[in-house]
Amino acid sequence: MNRSVLNRRRFLARLAQLGFVALGPLGFPLLRPGRARAQTPASPQPVAVARGPDAAALVREAVGKLGGMGGFVKPGDRVVVKPNIGWDRTPEEGANTHPEVVAELCRLAVEAGAREVRVFDRTCNDGRRTYERSGIRAAVEGLERAPVQLEHVRDEWFEVTDLPGARELSRWPLYRPALAADVLINVPVLKHHGLTHVTIGLKNLMGVMGGNRGRVHQGIDQNLVDLNRAVRSHLTVVDATRILLRNGPQGGGTDGVRTANLVAASADVVAADAWGSREFGADPFQIAHVRLAHEQGLGVADLGRIEIL
Image 1 (cartoon, helix red, strand yellow):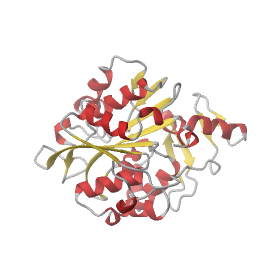
Image 2 (cartoon, rainbow, N blue to C red):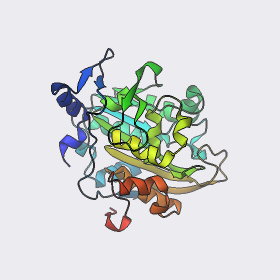
Image 3 (tube, helix red, strand yellow):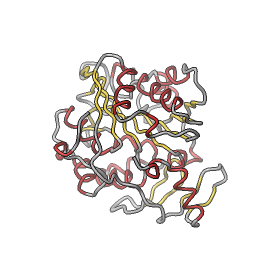
Image 4 (cartoon, rainbow, N blue to C red):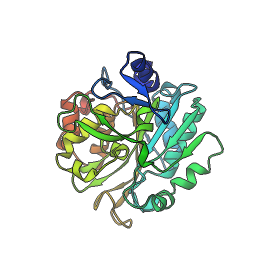
């Protein structure tokens, strides 16, 4: 894989040399709207799938099939792991990313030499309760390896940013640590959503958005494409260990949850979402934001062109 695609920090440093960005008061690069350009996959990327009862082992196997975490994270990189921690629900209820999936990705990033791994989400329910009840706080804080940081988002770190190439969502407050990371690992849980039918990687990035996200729901399909054009996932790991089939995105109880024992990984968030849509029982091209992302060149949703490893 082209290293330049992966290294967001060096990309921003180069932009700084060219005068496109400046260093902000918190040490993060300040994007100068309209100049930065997102990267898109040059060719169809494979989706690596692992099946079994051990969530952590599934992550290691899926990422291993793509060549290992070292293909994404280099020594000294600053890594963001962005799970879904949105809801005051237990792991069994399938509304949040499985805690062992999150923890294993942190382990792999540290093993690959990351100097910093930050884990966060802008939650929908109370953040303290979602971090606790999801099991993610205990799983991440139980890691022996430093330097992994589980943190709550800080309002002062959202910055209104232009979204280059957007068709609808041209500007929005985005979370600066996600923009400044060398590697962004997108870790959605596969589940139902009442508005978009299914929510996977493309929609999971709403967790880096500040402001009134309710406004994004009007025209959400194109808005999600615009967001993902500006904030690229270098690696998407889909948690399908259990799938919330109805009453999403929050759910409630375990009646609508199917145990699937699957994890998939891809460098292409669109391909990952196409695979997840099919596992959910939907044609990827009938999921509007997945179809639009494919049509507008963010990735490949045509499963006939995607190698499944």
